[in-house]
View: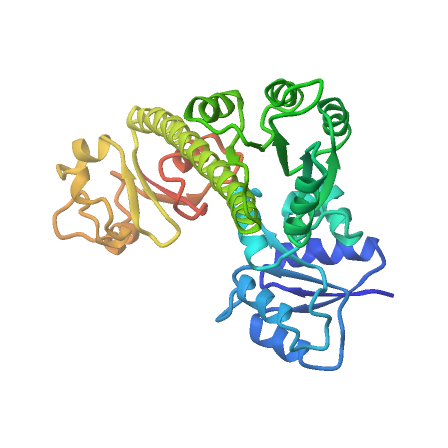
Length: 379
């Protein structure tokens, strides 16, 4: 039976990984931090899979993955490693995975509702650390041989000699990068490029040609190419332009994701502000004095009736502890008020359940606070 090492101090993640592995009949050993994991890895035990979260103590998950890749442990240096995250999977995570030689980024969803990526990891189908694929479209044998020799350690290479063959290949398989010769028989490079963009709009294509000019380079870029390589070129030039092109496009994609996320966050903030305003209006229109605290007793919100009944400004009380607020009678603190038995008012304090309508309104006032909000009513 195969064995996996799980390195995580997140109980929810640990439970889900252990359950997922159990269904696959894979034994699981769990370490709660990097130091214990290193002790475990230093033993004679070997592991078939490694699952690591990022926050595991003094050594983070990324650095621990690099130590494993160094080959100092009994576990094989090329053993499959997955980073487990509670956050969505972004392109920047994949970039980091390639730099640290991690095979996969798995989310909570991958472990629970959609296990396809999890199964691909176990079966070595998906590997972020694998060589990228390249389609070479070149009709000259000498150039084709030069490219294959120069890039064989950097890419998995398929090659075709015409535009028609290229279109068929692209229709049947996904490629990380395409190297396209401009001068092809029967179907010119610019027509092939146009067809490629129709089939796969975001396909990464580098065009190479012996007829270099600013106008031609501009034309290719406008058609969708990501770069331009002029013949004759050296092996070093070829390697540099191909590797940098992929990295550059990954960075651009990561930046677009970040920008989109910032837009979504801004929209969410506006929605929260709208909800908070409505919640504040609800609490301001009740006759009782409402004081909203977090679970530590720190005041987050006081409604308008407080000023009317006490004569104190609400803004002066925000941030104070509930026991330090100015109450109805000058010099009387929270403890005095709570113990007073007069018939003019009494103190009621309770925790609302998550489904409580008032709780939901109050919770929207400050989402960053712990959910155990308390509401104090003075009546």
